[in-house]
Length: 226
Image (cartoon, rainbow, N blue to C red; front, side):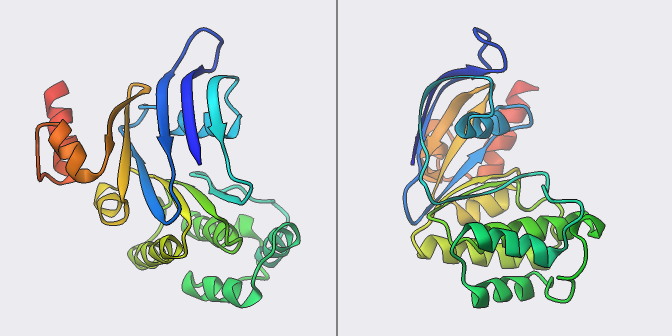
């Protein structure tokens, strides 16, 4: 999967993204990081064609699953009905889906309406609906928001398993410790442009902080701006 955005925005001629280019490789997790308002979510919109104006080339795989930051669901469908809908559109493995439900402790509430769930439970539903597809590419926007510590740990292990399976993963997150643990490389966006790109070691060298942790590099940038 390759993304090459020359410029993009909500109005023609008024770019909020410029020269964003990166590739996702099978069996690799790429972290899309940056501060609030840096352009991460806008980049996702550009990739999916929901941004009004985009100049560039975006090559999306046919087999792709997306986990949005804000849970999206049907108000009057139960969890089981959501799963049936996904299964009707994609080739799925019932046993694997059941395993996901148990992993995220949702197996006892499949008959309940998703709209009645807590924020964290709704996030778990989004994870199950995406992971059950066994897609070749995963795009995940802030998956740790709303999850408790146990669910976060289980998700980390699932994503590591997906990487081992050969899935290309784009992880958008503010949780830098988890990003550092999971990601093979990073695309760091700042003010609609790529600030740094590469492995943690490469970003450390480029920022003048060789060997530093991701959080420390980001902290130094924030203090410099202040």
